[in-house]
Length: 598
Ligand code: CA
Ligand code: CA
Image 1 (tube, rainbow, N blue to C red):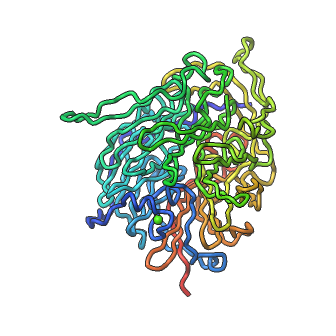
Image 2 (image 1 turned 45 degrees about the vertical axis):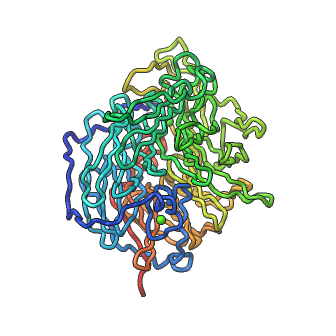
Image 3 (image 1 turned 135 degrees about the horizontal axis):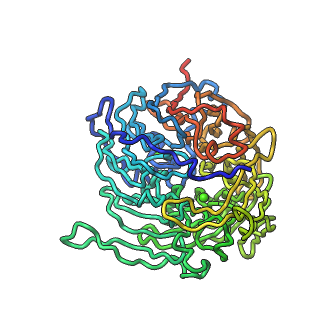
């Protein structure tokens, strides 16, 4: 068994890459994106101004010109190459406003493109220092739009706001110290004039937090740590002072209630994936990553609020409710996945619910007003660590499939290994699922794999991997790893599934045309009948699709777009799975499709 080292996967960056603007900088000033535009995004079909096609994150578009009958006529309108020598994983979701597409790319780049012609309007190429510490490829998941700003995060843990017309930097804020392992890869979210972000770096002993800034200026408003014992802050503007005053705003949780000693100071709970916002309950939902280090024997207790879903008040940054899916996580089951608000129609009632397909293999439905558990059902074929969730306590019933503590004897003090299922890359990883209110189904990109896992001694050191575990990921089945599954949230039943040879690593889109779109590492963008799962269309994009498809309407025609470019965590961390997919080629492009005119 080869030990996988985090250092081996850290990518050194091209030093001195200049901040560049190229192409024809558009001088035309177009109307900006308002709070109302963001709030209404899910129903306005001529634009896509938020990550998730609406702040609830349903990834549903009512557009139906492209449908199960017409999708066979879907052909490329144009394609755009990101160019350069930086072809790595392209995990972004593009956004579209006023006939312009803004898409982020590997190595903290951002392109503005004319949506009609595919012409580049401008490119922003962030200057990255040597020594950045991204855990899982040099990816980025997308930008937020507000006013005339395009806002995105960078691998050196900065938040950058660019002028949408010119690509020139309007403001830039340091989120945290990249030398301590902080980075930023998620798409920021706009909530009532604020830009909401988290932090990446859960494998380096950072502490996760959710933060709100004034979207126009980048000024900090509040910061809420996710790990019990850490202090929250708000930032008050003082007259005559440029810098706002940092004021204590309540500790998270209760010191040492579920963490021993000082372990909470480097307790993880990274908020490395974006959140969602539900205007009906006025709550921000954020998932939190694994507790640190992975070796659970170092931190007896539940380790709140790691591996949890948090509901936060957007005005105060206070935690309104929390639900922990993997207490005292021992498997790197980050609970970061998107929590999607939807109306659960069950037993003649409509419940304000939310759903999340967790890395640990459970599909959870919660009451989103108070965090109460409604159901937890497996969406993968095997879960070795648990036999189900106790509906009284909301806690998983464990089987004891946990790796042993490090031992004193031997050269490397490795503890007793276990074969654990699912692997740490999860029953589902970052790639967002979609919910279709017309079929009442969720479409979940799942993977079937396990891992050999063992613990090792570890101590915290700034900027070094803080894991204390070794692993090798292994496929469970010969014929497939990935599975796109349609799940009925009322029963947890899997209504249909599509099996894919390679692990699925891209986001999902569903539409009023009874379609579900998702990409494959083998290079295809595929469309399925949303009710039956029948594959009704596919197109080879030339490299693996690990980005998020979108759709919008322009000049009376429906368009579909998806980034193409293989990469992400699987080739870096996939163990035996990586061997199966090593023939796949990297890339970096945006594909845009529309119906062929007869
Ligand atoms: Ca819209
Ligand atoms: Ca993790």
